[in-house]
Image 1 (cartoon, protein in one colour):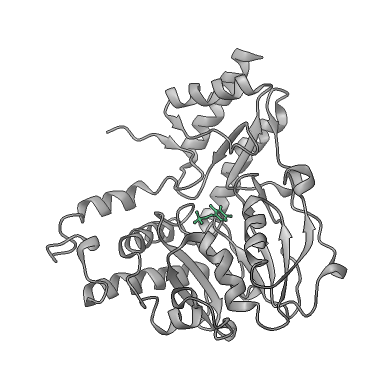
Image 2 (cartoon, helix red, strand yellow; image 1 turned 180 degrees about the horizontal axis):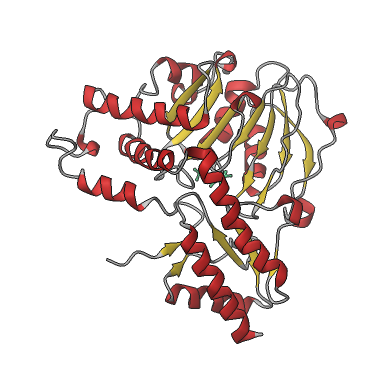
Length: 360
Ligand SMILES: *Cc1c(COP(=O)(O)O)cnc(C)c1O
């Protein structure tokens, strides 16, 4: 067996320990004589797996009981629609920060359901930074205020959260959930597709303050109505059973790493290894502005698109794969989520130094 260092943006690398446990339990989960994927979601055995996954997530993020935790399907993109359908029923207007492709997709979707007030945007500079927020532009009557805490494609991250007063803050945390400590109480809703930093694709996590449930538009499909899904324990219909099980295994691994508090320190160190190298180099150019740098997705270019391609190919030959940047940014993107070991980042840094020496 030969595992690579997989720098993919998502679906992405998972802890080897979690994969090994899943492999060991594939044919016979703890004496049941079946794979978790073969179990009824209504069985006692499966409910225990589900409950443990939820408990682990609550523990890792210190989620208070005043928040519902939902395990849904439809990805983050499904929530682009679910958010306005569940929340845009007071003033019928919401504030959005346009900080990247996914943020933009979310606000375009929300416009189908109500009024969208774009309070700030960095679209003019290909989303290379988190835009400055002017509270004077915030609508105090907005039903919610929407941000994307980490912009996966551009490699940017909010260094500080906006102060929105009594307006609930809604955050797409798809690419940095569980990577750094957030006070859940600061948010009305946190949501994330699992396939970047939690586990496999197919699971979408929604963490919603309970007083925000029950406001949905009458047209809201049942499977997108957070209140109904909460009442049904996320099992109105068949949940993504295997993805939830695997996410549970990955989160158990994370607990052993010292939880979010522990991994955050490692993530800071991993990102610093690459940014220090980029800052010292006059060969590589980081594409995100310094004050907005992501700890999860490090984006940069070499002096030419041809060299970018050569970099990606040469790295792959040395067992470092999926480093090609997103087509809207170009260049190179190293996604270094929780499960990417620091040795993987060190190996990449060594490769970068050697590549620079060879091609300068
Ligand atoms: C990947 C990603 C999405 C899209 O997620 P899907 O689960 O594929 O719908 C949305 N937002 C962010 C920040 C992402 O990184």
